[in-house]
Every structure is written in structure tokens, then in C-alpha cells.
Amino acid sequence: MTTEEVSSPCIRNCCLDEKNVCIGCYRDINEIMAWSKMSNSEKKLTLNRCSTRVKEKKGN
Image (cartoon, rainbow, N blue to C red; front, side, top):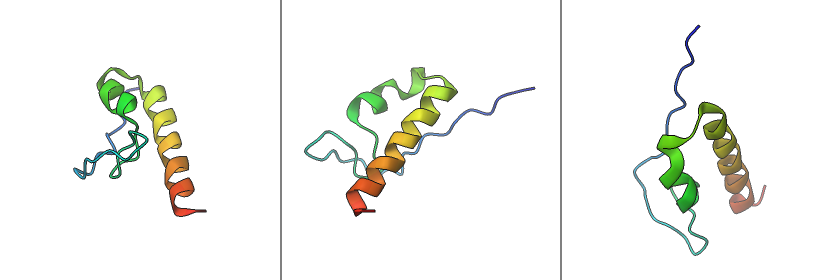
């Protein structure tokens, strides 16, 4: 059984806000730099954090 690689959430709208979080994908600078070395489980955790950041930003 093969495990499919988790894709980067990058949408090529790269600009960091005052908290060093990308306004395009909602990863912080450390997550962006570490992405290629993360395991799939780490990537999934990062995507969950991104989702939480989106909800917080939009006030939901």
C-alpha cells in the first residue's frame, strides 16, 4: 500500500502578515520552510492549523 504525498497548500499568493503567516496559504514562516522535510502526518497537522487560522481570521 502506498501513501500519497500531502500537497502543499501554496496558492502562489505569498505575502506574510504581521505574525509571519502567509496570507495565501495560512502557513507560518517556519511551516513554509520546513514543509519539504515534514512527514505526511506533520503536513496534515500543519493543514489543520492553517484551517484554524482561516476560521480565526474570518471570525468563525
